[in-house]
Image (tube, rainbow, N blue to C red):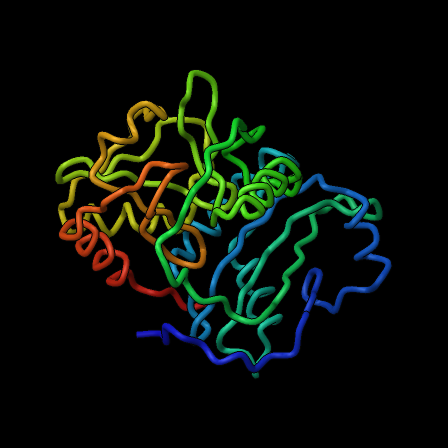
Length: 268
């Protein structure tokens, strides 16, 4: 089982493009363009959760944005090379973009110190926003950064996006699940299918625990027996949404936590 608490021991930042150290000119070019997509993962003992979901996400988004596929072996090779021999634990981000100097897509891998899961239940602030092309983890994230920062400035841990008609969709950097009896409800709204969410759904199915997609509205929030959020850092219970305090069903929350803890790590 990979370590849950990692020791920071890497030189940062480590930045490579197509398996080579990035030049300042390449970084400048990338900084001038936000047309691309990415995925982010936590690496422990050179393994990560849901690697197949990460690779499928990168390939699908590359096909949609650039009209070509992205081979899984290529991505895995770049990640492994960027980790080098001295890095077992890290935060890894893989960006895909197209340089002006080539017709092929380029892959940038950044390696930073590992990040721990949230230490406490999260307080969410609802905000009126819906990401464009929400199913893609795209590079243009001004809106979500703005509202995430706004929530933090107001004393909350995360923003919760509310779309037309009061429909709940996702957080600025998280997915949200709600506890409804013995089942987990994920909002049926435009949102990114986060890798940690997909990992948890797979493990819930393996444990024969019920989950489903269903429309969730702000007016429905008080009817749930709790909520939790997931992202690449892990999972955390939700303590409140705006002024609504949520008392999470401890029994089911323990089962959900156990399901995620049982997920196997994949070797990169």
